[in-house]
Amino acid sequence: MDFDLEWTPEQIEFQAEVRGWLANHVPKLKDHADPAALTADEYALQRKLGRELGAKGWLYPAMPSEYGGGGLDLGMSMIIEEELDLYHLATPPYYDTGGRLGSASIMVWGTDEQKQYFLPKILRGEIRTWQLLSEPESGSDLASVATSAVRDGDDYLINGTKIYVGSNHGAEYSWMIVKTDPNGDRHKNLSWFMMPMGLPGITVEPMDLLLVGGERGAASGVKNTVYFDNVRIPASHLIGGENNGWEVAGTHLEIEHGLLRSAVRSDEMLDRVMNYARTTTRRGLPLTDDPDVQDSLVDFYINSQVTRLLHFRNFAYRAQGKQLTYEGSQAYLHQKRSALSKARSILEVMGPRALVSDPEWAAENGHIEVHQRASIVEQHPGGTAEIQRVIIARRLGIGREKREQPGQLPSAENQGN
Ligand SMILES: Cc1cc2nc3c(=O)[nH]c(=O)nc-3n(C[C@H](O)[C@H](O)[C@H](O)COP(=O)(O)OP(=O)(O)OC[C@H]3O[C@@H](n4cnc5c(N)ncnc54)[C@H](O)[C@@H]3O)c2cc1C
Image: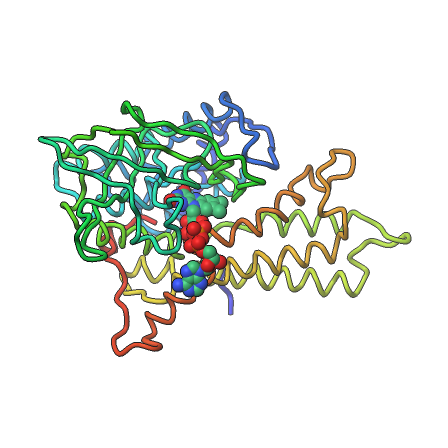
């Protein structure tokens, strides 16, 4: 079966336009293996590119144009993604959870006024947002969050701690779920806020972790603990109504659990490993002549393609408005599992060189060593592999009488992911 796409003459014309525009606008950035090394100046250049893409509607091309998206169809959106991919970038070209995740919740649950207020800022790249869900005692069991919001006149007062969140270089906004009814039933006691990060009482402290890498433009680099000490936020920033936060979170969690990746990303690491194997000799012969190396590279390639095609399927289904249930978690589970298998294949091909960061020895400019660590880290964000299995079982109706229903997504023409 051939999964390659053939573009129409109109699409080829658009592709040329995008390619020409990107050639004049994508800044030349250093090829950092570790996203934590991104400097403030480089981050500023990424944000500038984001705003320029946003002004053209190309930052979130499939989002509705009335809210600052491009209003483009699936094909045009994929062309933009493919062209950015050639620069090892994606939309957005920096870590921002607002455009694909938070905006979906606002689209489904926000009032008209809230949509007009928040969405254009996000979709045009004027602000970037973090997602603040996890807490010291609340990870997989997200419904158990303890950070509290207490109504006080026209405001709420927020107190609590979020961990493993955000990135380096700060954010203008975050969204978060908090407990608004300490005595309420589970899932009916939470609320969802858009939080301006400059409010008094918010402290952001970078976490001293081994590594939090990720993929290219979307990589976060650093994670933080964020403390809220009597933070006063206007009630107008509550989205979806008081004690309805679990439903609101269901929208972006649905996307994060496997519907997030665009379909077109190539596997940069596959190219790097292939390059290494072709250009490195052992006992006078290229590594690619060794049957064991060939085996490992084929395993790597298959894992990479299966992940890509599962995401591709989900991307296309969503564009057609098809109801998805377990498919997102299925793709995400495969992505997480295959990250470990691919790391094993790399180790088989390269041996200890895959694990050294010393510039004199590190292969592919340090990217391989960072990838090996990131493959372990990847098991956690967005729900662990075990949690994806739990979701798949519930959605298939395994061990329960009724199948679990997915969170509510924006309509097919408004989803833009
Ligand atoms: C790199 C990285 C980025 C992150 N980014 C963010 C972010 O931007 N925002 C944010 O809010 N959070 C973020 N997180 C936190 C992430 O969402 C949590 O780490 C994750 O949900 C797991 O929670 P936990 O670490 O508390 O582990 P726990 O929930 O304590 O789980 C511990 C172990 O128990 C297993 N387990 C738990 N429950 C079950 C169950 N029901 N069935 C089977 N096994 C189970 C888990 O799979 C895991 O192996 C990030 C984490 C990492 C590592």
